Every structure is written in C-alpha cells, then in structure tokens.
Image (tube, rainbow, N blue to C red; front, side, top):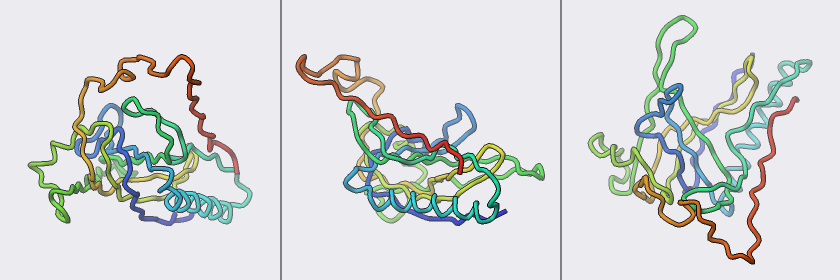
Length: 210
C-alpha cells in the first residue's frame, strides 16, 4: 500500500459557488465545501499541477500493483461550462470538500479543524469569530482564493483525488439573496429570436480503468 503524496496549492482568484466554509453542509455527511470557477485565462498553471498530480498518483498505484485493475472515480476538477447567477461561465471548475469528523477503524472519534477564513478587511489575520457569520451565505459574483490540500486515495470504491479546503481568502463579497437578480433567474429567455442558443458541453467522464 503506497502512501500518497500530499500537494498544497492555492487557487487564483476565482468565482465562488456553493460555499459552506463557515457552517458545514449537514444535508448528508457533514462537510465544509466550496466550488470554484477559475477563469480560463488564469487556469493553466493550477490545471496542469492537478492533472500532473493525478498522473503521478496513477503511476505510483500501477508500480505498486502492476497486475491490478483500478477503477477511477470522477475527478473533482476539470473544464466545464456552468450556470451561476443567470450567467453561463466557461471555467476550470474545482470542487473542494472536507469532512467535519468521523469514527476511525478503532472506533475512536476524530475531527478536522474548520477552514480558516480571511478577508480584505482583516488582512493577514483570520476573520474573528464574531464576524464570520457574514460569510455563511455567499452570493453569485463573489470572488475568493482557496488553499487546498490535495491527496490521492484508493479503496474498494475506486481511486481518485480529494481536494480539502484549508483556508479561504474572500477578495470580493456579494451578499446572498434568495430572490433572483435578473430575468434569467426567473426562467425568462433573454436571447433574441435570431440568436443561436448556447449549448454547454458535457464534461468528459474520468470513470475509466487503468
């Protein structure tokens, strides 16, 4: 059994979606999580680092078990066209998540530290506990950077890469509103009758054997 390399990365300033970085998402297994839309013109470096990490991890698995067939799970990163706040955005999408805690094989409870939160107002110091609630709900158009802990995993359910959010720096904050902010948000087609509708490309699946 190999011990996967741990890679630390910081994203470029990116659009934030589905941010649960103050209070964890408890709909299923409690997790802190965030989705980032990295602008395509700023994505080359981080896309290369993540892709190269995945290739190195696969090579290590095959070197350790050359006769074994591995089932690859869907990767939490890749180029997509995605809807956010009524906009259609082509970006390098990163989906980071981290469990709040759990029970280990010995039956002992464990907990992860919550992501550290920074903003422009507090500079190099973390946002104080009294001010964190402001960022519990983040609206479309918010911009931030995330410090990621990247590590490969393998098990009975397949192999892949997990991206855990260690810290978030908010560069631009847009307050969340439950009401749509434009016509598209209410389901109206704002394209002219003569305009050809845009079609989103379906991301290629990474679910393959190697």
